[in-house]
Length: 116
Image (tube, rainbow, N blue to C red; front, side, top):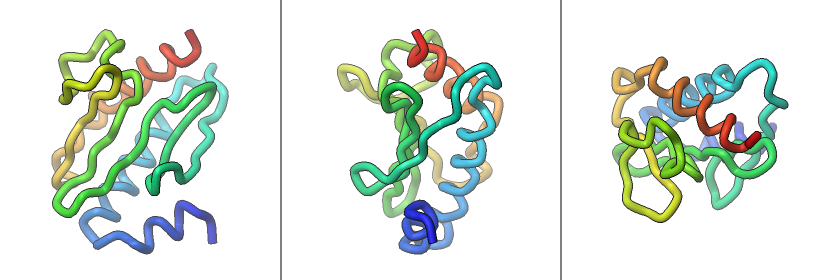
């Protein structure tokens, strides 16, 4: 069993469904020209990196955040929430909240920034 599978087993059903859906979008959204994501558990959550940390999935009691490490620097920063120096996030309470086009755009911009 991989570390990600072990992590998923610790989640409640709704969180698990959200994390799985977002994970699939993250992995599918990187441009074909980019190196493959490294997927690891860091800070007790799935984290995706190429050169540096790009994003992570933080499961909370009633929602899951897609955290973008350098979100404040993205052209689409207005689509993200948060006020930290660098990190911004998208919040999802159900799988119906996931806008695949929006998530894909954010991930593509974050990968481009990482390649930068």
